[in-house]
Each structure stands twice: as structure tokens, then as C-alpha cells.
Image (cartoon, rainbow, N blue to C red; front, side):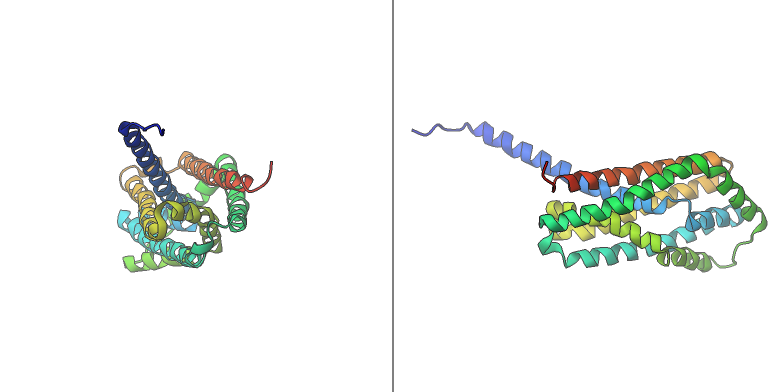
Length: 246
């Protein structure tokens, strides 16, 4: 005689499964958002240009630089996703997952440590150099020039492509297991949200509180960026450890 399972148990199981699915979706989408945020935040050529042009010519120049940079970042991310599209059928392969996790650790761990070191050692020197350029520089007459400059500084930066390969290598298998073939579309959408969040913040700072842009601002940005990258590297290391016998 087979014992009957109460119907409310089925309902509870279904509710738990739905909650787990919801949490997985949140993890995937939030990871893509922070991927975009971390891509935009480094105090490199693009942000220096966006701040400098904004301080001299107004916030619209910062916006124009941001539009160019976001376009370049999304193109590079889309190219990496396009390459990953051909791996969809093999993303559950343990060997491939091990290789992708190793790429993530190799790329993201040094980057995270690098930005944490910069947060401690170099913000004053970087700010002093940038401040001199802001005081002495000029801005182009047409905003299209700023868009082109932001785009070029992003698309032709080899470190940007290396970054996207590193983070996407481990986000894509996880995202595909949760979102299926819609993962690239959701990834582009959330990465774009992360990129635009950063440049929106930068525009607000340049427009309303430019006096707050100093060594402390540089230090804070680099520290947050370093922690985000180390978080991604830790996730890659955890994934990598699961594929080795204990």
C-alpha cells in the first residue's frame, strides 16, 4: 500500500522551486549589472576624458563621452557573447567549465588586486595629473567629437576585451543554465544598465558637486571596483574548485 503525499506538500515544493528559480534569476541579472558597472568605473582614459571635458565644457560633454564608451563596451560584450553562442551546446561540459573558470581567475584576480593597490597608493598622483589637464585643456566645439573619442578609447583598449572575456567566461554558462537562449539578450540589457548607471552618476557629480572630485573620489572608485573584480574572481575560483577532486 502506497502512502499518499498530502496535496499541500506539492504546493510547498512548487513554491520552493519557484523561489529558487527567482533567486537564480536575480543572481544572474545582478551579476550582469555589476559586470557593466565594473567595466565603466576604472579611472582610466575614458573617465579622465569624461570628467575633464565635463569640468571645462559642462555635463553634456561628460554625457557624450559616456555615450561613446557605452556603445564601445556593448559592442565588445556582444562580440564575446557571439563567440559564446557557438559553445551553448557544450556549456555543461566539465572540461569547458574548468577552462572558463581558470580564464576568469587568471584575468580578474590580478585586475582586482591592481585596483585595490591603486586605491591605496596612486589616487593623489592621478588626481594631480588630471587636475592640471582640466585647468589647461579645451573642449571640442561639437559633442560628436566627444562621442567618437569615448568610443575609440574603449573599443581599441585591449584590456577592455580581456576584461569582457574574463567575466563573460563564467557568467555565460551560469546565465545559460538559468535563462536558456535568452541569456545574451538579458545580459546585454543588464550590462547596459550597469554602464549607464556609472556614467549617470558621473554626470551628476560633474554637474552638481564637481568640488567632490578629488583623491578621495578616485580612491573610493578604485576600491569599490577592486572589490567587485575580486568578487567575480572568487566566484570563478569556487567554480574551478568544484571540478577538482578533494
